[in-house]
Image (tube, rainbow, N blue to C red):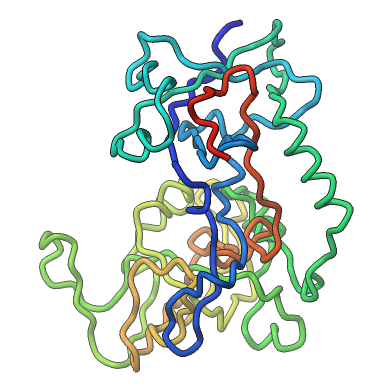
Length: 334
């Protein structure tokens, strides 16, 4: 069949490398006698019931190919002309692969029939995977704090849309009566972070006094945020922040488009930033930086790191199963 996607793979000789363990409360070292789960990447790897070997494709398309018992594609080995694919490795054992420090194997995802434009591509993950998935679904129970969870996309899409700008964001005082779910965190994008000494000096900036207050528009170009909010957000530092004030009226751009309220926010300092936040530059402890007049487009809403469903304790973890007919006998070691 025709090529759907290439699948160069990282070979992992021992699937136990995917195990995660509890930490010893006294030393902080992991306790290998107390397994706590498997790493998320296991779901994107191929394995075999009679081998310790894992094969993990690292191309983007392969990660989006889902399971079906009526697939329209399958995995096969790449041909000898494929770069970084050594067909002779298929004749060697797992111990040989353990000694190889570079990639050297590649799969191909190929169609098993004609695939129509817009049709989703599926492969068969194997009966062992499907059995494990059905067991997981049957036994699954929601976490105890699931009522206090909502994905960030309920407030803002992954790519900022005009409608997102029209949703007023609640201040910290308003959140006392109507809190946001505990997994959400706000980020303020701003070029304002203390006094800059030599902007060209490798992008290094120095912090100023202990307390700073700024007008957002004094340091940032409004036009970029009015017309190209998503691109502008990529090029400015972002800080976890607490919203302390919202303008009474919404603001409008030069074309008359409603671009939402303006906000004041406190940038979170080092001692307030949790380990699972995406802080690009951390404000030193004991400093307070307040930004006023922040446009809605310069505030993003995110899920705290590792708070999404796929990262929860007990989330489904299982390798896809590589078909028996292409799995080398030399790799069977269980």
